[in-house]
Image (tube, rainbow, N blue to C red; front, side, top):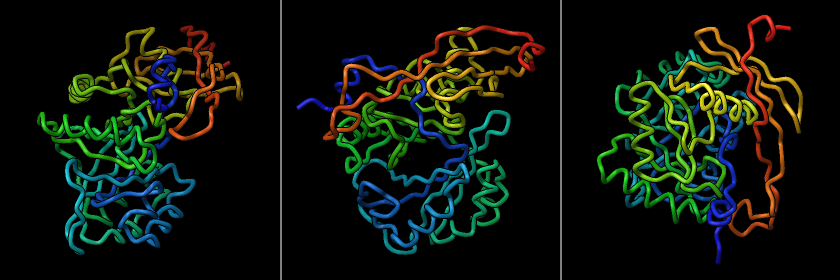
Length: 312
């Protein structure tokens, strides 16, 4: 039986503009099995999971569970677990880490402040510090969400870990099962699809040098989908590699057509026209789902403009 990722790959469905949206990521280590809705169907206390979902709603913070690769045995109550927070908006990017023996400590966070990019609440509530290790490579492996994530994501995570990638974690959900294996790289928050180990290593090497690899990229989680597609189009057209060089400063219009203003830190500006289309022929958006025509973000024009033209 064909999987959703096989169909998407065979139909050459574009990746750009398909990343999950989150200005800030909050990651909690939770070993053991995960269910389809991991915050409330793992071995994390479901009442805590519901409280965290409610606290994060509408704040720009996206919560996910992470675990190391390999056997997923539970840990004893009170065991230390890793927590990460990362803000992905260019110019204010940061990644902090902490440990906790009680995940209820996360309820002490000011989620609205965290979504705005303030790491003080993370540092105060959890004793967080700037992360001084390698970039994080989060590989979606949650087979309860979609079997492609398990069939393709788990081998990728295991290969990366076995080859010495220190920052690799399995993660519960990144969206876009049909692009499996999917990977989110922090601190910059760019997502990748149909990932292979050698490509992920190149992406991580780029992050260590402060640059973004565009090949296989789904977009930056800091932006909504039209902005993701526009930013990647400018990176490609203008050869921009520097990680925090580009920002989305304006989006005009509504589905199915937008004009997106992209700004470079060196003063250059672009208008990018993005049109929402329907992927055809119909394909499953997830394994076991009915055939559908998922929205795609097509860039139809990229034009560099003066600052005066942008402001008009």
